[in-house]
Image (tube, rainbow, N blue to C red; front, side, top):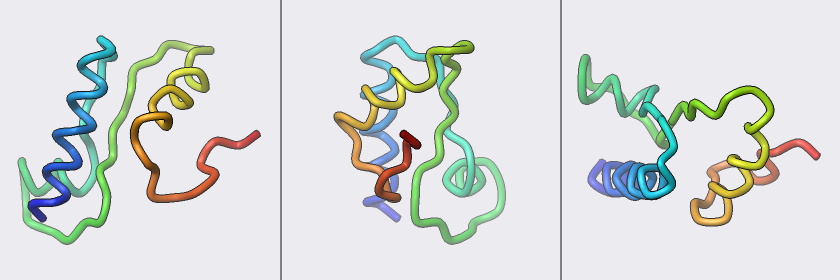
Length: 74
């Protein structure tokens, strides 16, 4: 779990450095604010505005490795 928290902190650092509005969601958020449960990844919601999703996703993937390869559809 410590590695997952470190990954979440790194993700938050990257997002904050770019001034993107975001929110950690999913299993890690539930661990922090609710009932403990097993999770293998960090989920985040980015508030990009309509039309800016793909460029921001591509920029994020330049510095953060996704758990699922090919996550952006071509």
